[in-house]
Length: 121
Image (cartoon, rainbow, N blue to C red; front, side, top):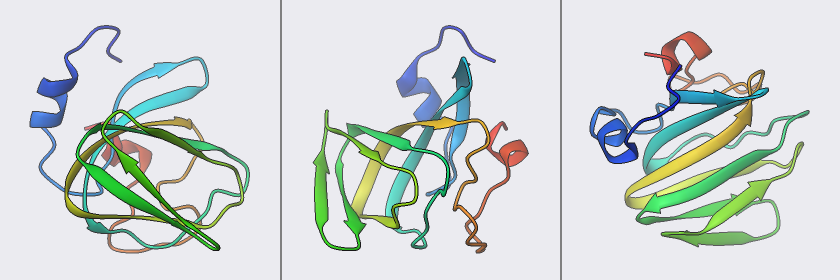
């Protein structure tokens, strides 16, 4: 696992949207990078919070009762159990911090869902 790296170089190696890449770990959390464009399935994580930090671009986080717009430099924490759906009209670069046991799309399986092993490539 990387201890030092360059975020821009890491993003350059990501070719698929919504396919998180694990770049490092801190204690019991993974640090992941992902490129967003379009939308991913609505899902939740019953037992884990999830932090999104926008490196480049912007996206909207659709929640049950509100839409949160996140721009470059913004972060947002989705608390455990909250159903959410990130949607981005243009390419957006996002860093995520999640517990190691957090499933990519929670208990919702789709063609976009990636295993931890797939996220480590």
